[in-house]
Length: 169
Image (tube, rainbow, N blue to C red; front, side, top):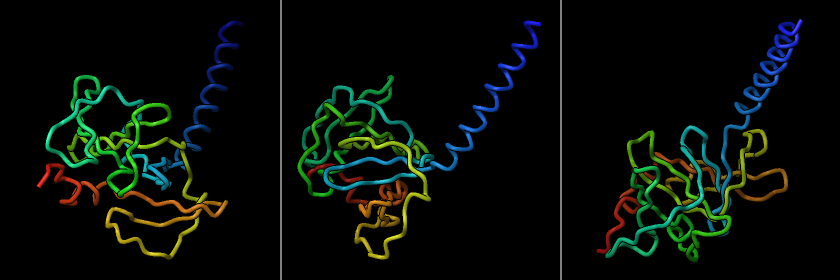
């Protein structure tokens, strides 16, 4: 009789996990804030998001290059994403997070962002026809409350010389 109960629990657990997986597929975007801007990134490009570890400064780099972070034995170059866009610096404390990007491209890069805002669905946004001059912005969107969001094209960002050249000229 105990086996029947275990089978029922297993089936209920399996049904719940399948429903969650289906829901996760629909929520294919990760939202984050960098300075005053709200951003979205496709989950496969997002990598991992974590609290910032201590950062080691690197001399003779641009102000938006925050330094190096050791994440489980791997060094990541950390870019303050808000400061990269000309906004005030992000303190690596409180709600700030490191978004590890570039793993798919073989680049150990992390974006220091002001806060993570969770998983989002494509259906939660409508296309904004306004253009953005930054080539790493793949889409401008608006959420149901009318708030503007920018969708990050990680590959385009990692290919830009102005992003890759963190050294002072």
